[in-house]
Each structure stands twice: as C-alpha cells, then as structure tokens.
Length: 252
Image (cartoon, rainbow, N blue to C red; front, side):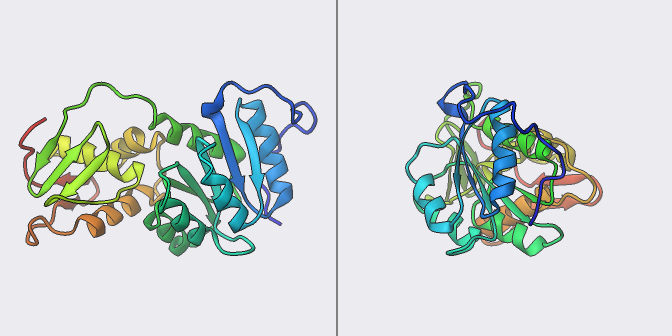
C-alpha cells in the first residue's frame, strides 16, 4: 500500500475542521484508504474542504456534480482506471485534475496529460508537494489582468477571455496548462522561452532536471495543433534553452 512520504498530524485536524470557502473544496479519488485519510487530515489543516471517493464510477459521478474546485485522481482504480475516468470527466467538465501515477511510469503520465490532466505527481510523493501543486493549479484559475479579446497568429485565433483556441475556425480542446503555455509562447513569438519560465508562469512551480511536465505539455500542444497551415512547425525546441513559437502575432 502506497503512502505519502511525509507524516501528517493524526488527531489535530478533525472532520469538522473549519474551511475557508467553497473554492477550496476538493475531491480525492484513490482506493488507498490509508493514503486518503492521511491526505485528508493534512488538506483540512491547509484550509481545504475534502471529500473522498474510492472507485472510478463514484469518482466520476462526484466530480460531475460541479461541487469541486479541483480533483486529485489516481491512475489505478477499481471499477475502471483513472485515465478512463478523466476522459469521462473531460467530456463534460473542465474542472482541474491532478493525476497520481506510479513512479517512473512515464507512459501513464503522458497518457494522463493527453487525456486532459492539468498536472501529475508520481507515487510515492511528499504530501507537501501535492499541496503546492494543488495551489498552483488553483491559482491559474484565479481572475487574471485584462487580456486582449483575440490574439491572432498564423492559422490560430486565441481568445484569452474565454480561454478558447480556434484553428482555421475549428475549436481545439486544450487543458488549462496547455492553454497557458500556448499563450505565453505566442506572446513571446520569435523568442526563446525557457522551460523554467514556462514552469513558473504556467504550472506555478519550478521543475527539476528530470521533470518532463513542460516537455509533455509541449508535445500535446504539437499533436493537437499540428503544423501551421499544414506546412510549418509552430513550436520549435531550442536545445538546452527552451521553446520558441514561430511567426508573429497579428494583435496583442
């Protein structure tokens, strides 16, 4: 049975611990009841209201009630796996989702991001890191400074206010992290944006040398957006430096 690597207080946080507001209500979907209990205590101390689900059907049903600001979803679940659950969720909701995956299983992490996860964390993990990632994902959903109505570049029309992307007038479904990365790259079109800057601005956290989060999100963007007008690669790698969006926006 997998455990978070950081011990959490046992009795100081009860189920009746006060919460700050509905925006902090989260759902943990994991069949490891011991891990859930440990995380629930810590998250309540951190000001979150927490509900638990232990199967794929229950997790999907609870998520789709619209009661949660964020969902933490394990890949391995009885009654169906977490990737299937995420696809069902994404068909009806854009609620932020953080996936929990087996350590070292990059295929699970890539599959989770491709299915629409906002972030992932391999087990076993430090519980405090999960809290930090949750806050980073939630922060991205806070109201942002005024944005231009449309940023047009090549065959794309990016709508920052509604967070929509149209490619030749056909909508492209992006996760929250993918949208933020695309907009950051487009605003800096023609210039290299480092992996560290992308992680700090769009994921709300630094990345280590072996963390492939940014690279996986970029890979997903390339697959979803394809070539510009079917001819030109739109996001290029700058070896050892970061990524660059080719072309120049028509409006900012």
